[in-house]
Image 1: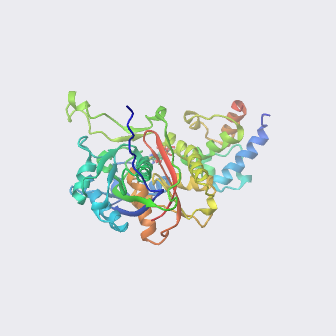
Image 2 (image 1 turned 135 degrees about the vertical axis):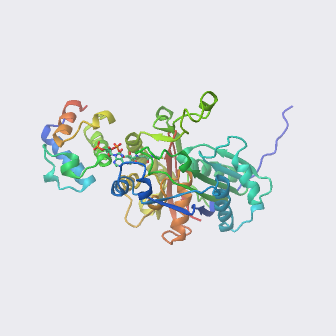
Image 3 (image 1 turned 180 degrees about the vertical axis):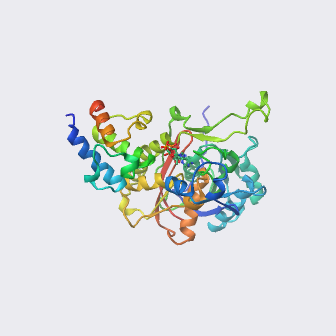
Length: 336
Length: 82
Ligand SMILES: CC(C)(COP(=O)(O)OP(=O)(O)OC[C@H]1O[C@@H](n2cnc3c(N)ncnc32)[C@H](O)[C@@H]1OP(=O)(O)O)[C@@H](O)C(=O)NCCC(=O)NCCS
């Protein structure tokens, strides 16, 4: 017998209700990076736009930074932790594979047994999480979803690698997605290109230590083929960004803000040109003082634009994340 | 139809102007991208991407390194254009 199964009933649409961020207290200027590599402040600034980044101290763990950012996002949304029905955490720098750090974060935040899990989608993690959260809210599986992008990339940085030592930073950014009467998160344009999985990756898998000692092999770090990644980002990602605009039925003229993954200012500047973004569009340039914080970069940049008044609640923003996988996700959102 | 050497130079000059802000008349065959035209390694990637679109040619990363002068790029495109 095929019994009739009742389905959940979700909200007609979803929106970002609040945003929060946490930046570690220690600010690391380029001068400090130069102790380990042959480079210059001028070179780092001109090739990446980065002048400082934040690196986490021992107490600024993945969980702690997430709790700070998540708590702010919940408060910004005008909610209390008990109202959170799901917690999604995107990270590549939490070093305990199981259990998911999302469960610990959910507990520390004082939520009431929400669904909680981690995702691994590199620098596109925020966009992937946003797509999932929107689906959950409109499906009715959770009324309010907390998405956190968090990284301690300083733990995965090879200080002696000229191509990456200056790029990465630490931090956490979070948003809460909840019900909306009107569309406020556009269709996501996302995907993966696994044929390019070698262009950004961790040098060694963890199980290398089963056979070899940590004296023999150096702790894993992130490596990348900079030029190949740069080419892919400026060429392919501009197309993805345009597609996200098209699918949301928004023209570049109608945008108020552009919040791309903060990988490198040169990628951002190139995208602005290709997309022909008009002058009035506010562009997030948080990478200058935050470095590349992978999954945390978009919510951190979003929070800063709103906190400094460069963007305001209700503004229309294009967000795009891209990175290791290679993976990408772009969508148009109404800012909280 | 394949572009002539003159057309390629003209097109490249426009691309370099767009990306690095160098006046088109300064983009000459014997000029070095990095030393004379202020095109660094990342701007070079942008120039290459734009040239690929414009001249229907594929320029792999490994070949980009060998394109030191405007003349090198013009020759490469002449030879490889579709
Ligand atoms: C990392 C990145 C800035 C390096 O720039 P690049 O132009 O590709 O660097 P290259 O390795 O080709 O080197 C170009 C020149 O700079 C020099 N160089 C490289 N690293 C240097 C450094 N840290 N300091 C000073 N000089 C450096 C090289 O020796 C080379 O010099 P040469 O032309 O005289 O031989 C750039 O590739 C990049 O940002 N790519 C995108 C990466 C990214 O954002 N990844 C994350 C995506 S999520």
